[in-house]
Amino acid sequence: MQLISQTAVEGRPGPNFAARNAQIDATALTDLHVYARGQPYALYRELREHAPVAWVDEPISGAGFWAVTRYADVMKVNGDPQAFSSQRGGILMGTPKPEQGHPLLTRASLDAMINMDAPWHLELRREHMAFFTPKYLGKLKDRIAQEITNLLDAMAPHASEDIDMVEHFSSRLPLYTLCELLGVPEPDRPKFLEWMHYLERAQDLAMQQRVGTLQLSLTC
Image (tube, rainbow, N blue to C red; front, side):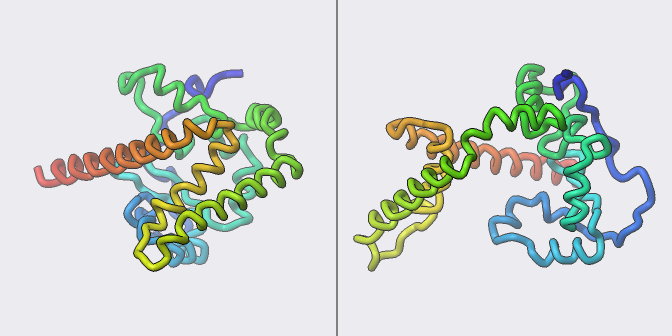
């Protein structure tokens, strides 16, 4: 078995053949601020109806990717790793040039289960299947339901006040679920929330810096 960092290749910057579908600007799919306002359902519908396989440029953060939006096409892509490989360079991150970035960090980010093709992906999935049995998920569902009750009870005394639902509920419930899956001790769980905030801020800051650099290069 070769590691993904040994097999990933840089793709060409754009389609190799003439377009067969309508040309639709789908760059909004790469804009974090779009999703802050909600899912772009109208764009999804337009892509499914007129350009079910569309090339999306990433002028700021990457080399671009193919957006496949119809269910049957998605199933076809997922079921044929020989033709549609994640391991030779997926869309989760840009494949850096050899002279860019720290080689160990690049390998660590690329050599992850989610980037693997069959059969190795399935072999690793089998190692985790014990955590996704009906019995285990039933118990997890009960614990999550109790946590929902706890969070709502904690907000109840403030029912007559304005309250931040993200801070008191929606940022805490997914984190609770993740920590339950990972077996993180309860005293350590607040650290996860703090770390998530740092990661989100770092991603937003990095995007702003890329946008600023691109705008500067365009004006020069």
